Image 1: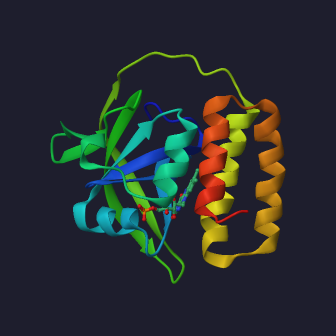
Image 2: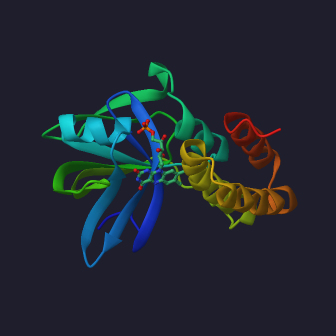
Length: 186
Ligand SMILES: Cc1cc2nc3c(=O)[nH]c(=O)nc-3n(C[C@H](O)[C@H](O)[C@H](O)COP(=O)(O)O)c2cc1C
């Protein structure tokens, strides 16, 4: 099962010239993604048949890729056998997967993944930081809030903002400010 932990791994997924935070689920020796219809990631996995999990710990990149595209220079091609895939230049490690649509429902696509190639590029320690973790949570809620404008989601984002301000560093503060900009938060 390679670099993934059991449970949901919040990685930055790359497909052709696209990057977005996505959960990759490892349970019972199976690797899967659940994708809402309409994202570029979903479209490109269906058309390309591959996806790369990028392991990266920059909170700003999680916020940026959740809401907009990265420039072409952010990507680098890798040979993964059956496919030439694209990973992020700045990732610490990556895993390329062959991706098949297992099931489609009205709400989402269930994608099954088979590892093709993986690489660890740097070994770095990432001490647990509640500010970083709250950026991940706040950004998940932010992607839904942007669509629904649900007040309950904004309450959750504000709760996480409190933790980010208390526990984060300058990169987390920058990510939070960017998140509020994307959400037109006053
Ligand atoms: C940490 C995190 C995990 C996410 N996981 C998923 C996921 O598993 N499936 C999904 O459809 N969207 C997920 N999202 C939302 C997408 O990142 C978001 O819809 C994004 O705008 C899609 O970008 P794209 O259109 O470039 O693919 C997640 C967001 C965050 C911040």
